[in-house]
Length: 88
Image (cartoon, rainbow, N blue to C red; front, top):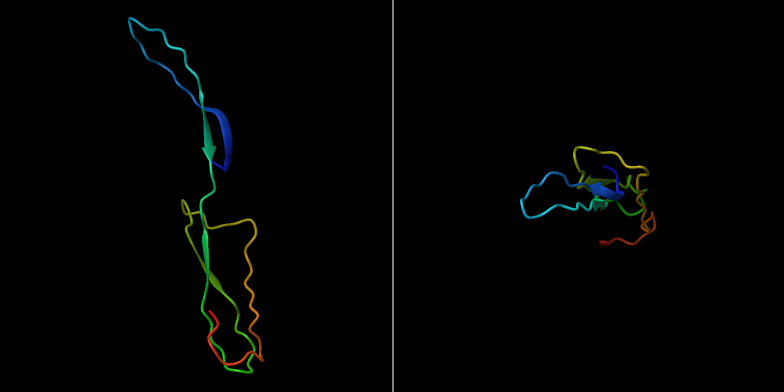
C-alpha cells in the first residue's frame, strides 16, 4: 500500500456478549516512508587525471521493489588540480 493516511481503514466486526452490545468505531491507518540509504562509493585517482565516474549503492529496498521516481546524483569538488590527499 502506498504511503498515505487511510481514515477508517481498520474495521471491526463480530463480538458477542450476553451483557454488552458493541459499538464499533473504525480506526485510521497511516503508512509512512521506508528509509532507503544511498552510500557513495569511495574513489581514487592520480593527480591531474579526470575524475572517475561517481557511483553509489542503495540499501534498504522493501519487498523486492527496486525502483524510485527520481534517482539521486553524485558530485564532488575534487577535480584535476585538487592537491594529493584524502578527502572524506
